[in-house]
Length: 130
Picture 1 (cartoon, rainbow, N blue to C red):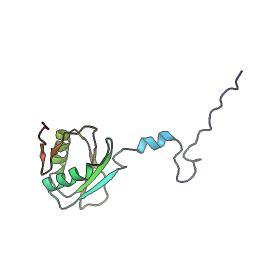
Picture 2 (cartoon, helix red, strand yellow):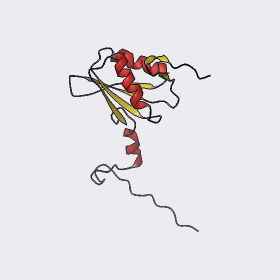
Picture 3 (cartoon, rainbow, N blue to C red):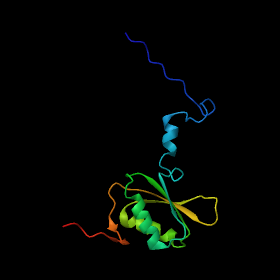
Picture 4 (tube, rainbow, N blue to C red):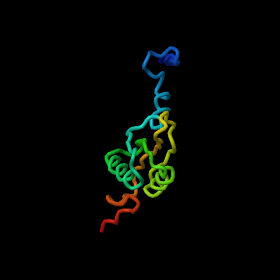
């Protein structure tokens, strides 16, 4: 006969050690949200094509599920970023609250199998390999 298992004591935010999360669930709740970027791209001063070219180059090494924040002053970004995500298959997460008034911040989550775009024209899908 085995002894009954005892549950580990529950840790609450009040009893957790400073700088730690009470349990794995709490850590998972914030991972991958727009508040926790895996990469931040400074696109201030860049307009549509330059912004997308920088974005395209900087995310090339990231894995699926990575969250990217894009800082931008481009007034067309609220239209361009969701459209580009739709084209490539990445998930547009929307605008992220940001204290500064000189730029906006938008977030996206990378997909595992994005549609590749041309290196010089981010609005055009790359030609299919023969």
